[in-house]
View 1: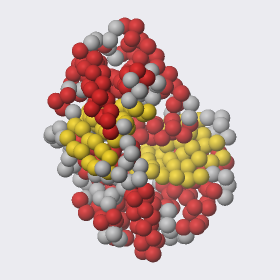
View 2 (view 1 turned 135 degrees about the horizontal axis):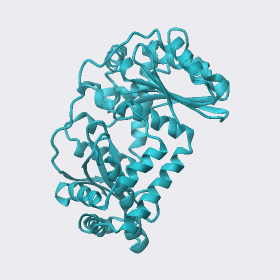
View 3 (view 1 turned 90 degrees about the horizontal axis):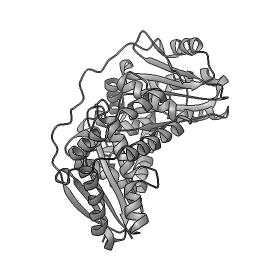
Length: 408
């Protein structure tokens, strides 16, 4: 699973993995997200992800949306705290069609005011519908506690109050500031010769003037654990417990990924699921999550339960955290944990779309791509002592924050 790499003269990087599959996947990953917004721009990165599809110098919204759909393909986009990505899946003969469209919408969108107004209402409706899903909303609200006062703590969708003030000039200012060629990666997996792919990239992206980010991102500094309880009209109680964690480049990142998988990963045999659900039956769903960013990270445990079980569930969670801090894993335990996460990674690599997006993100932030063999080697190098030290550093109850949604 080898990726080939190339850099255009304007700084845009290209990575590609050849596959015999008839379906190709290609994306433009941009190192710009919600953390790059000014205070008055909250939600603007996500809003731009919507409005770049609303018209260019040569295409109207209908023609943009139909361009790949008319040949059986699809185009989509997402915005995260640190990335914006426009990507597509299509039959491999239509690579050039994809390049033509994406270069057009990213660099030649015109942002008509009528479309901006309409899209504001759509995003506000998206925000309101999101509030109907407390298990998702609590994860974003928890970011505000962990990254209090920092852009990483802001909700990616923004607020209705901010959205109402967005206009074409604000959109263009954000793009000029953040959509720079040095922070872009074209990532591809498909049946296409690499030299031909580079030629297409040169044709559609090569004439974009070279640019780089002029201002550094606000670094994450300081952390004060917080406790917050919010009354909501829910049947269940929802809870998040967590802490700041390691960044993407931290030497213990792999160990933290392994530790998180042991504690509350997707496997039904993770410790939290076995204790809280299987043994005691306190909740239907409990998981832990670890999200690394370029200079920081967040670790969290989520569960939803009957209001009468919140205290008991927290006690069980703390018991499992204590076990990880106090008991060094045996060699057989550690071997099983490594085998499990290695298998999960291998299964994830089976999805060409997921692989393409993961490789693009890795190239964007770390300027490298780890093969499945390299990932396996890193996992194998993690020791029981490292896991114990990591648990004591990040899973200390004195460093934990907690957010609870309780039924009103």
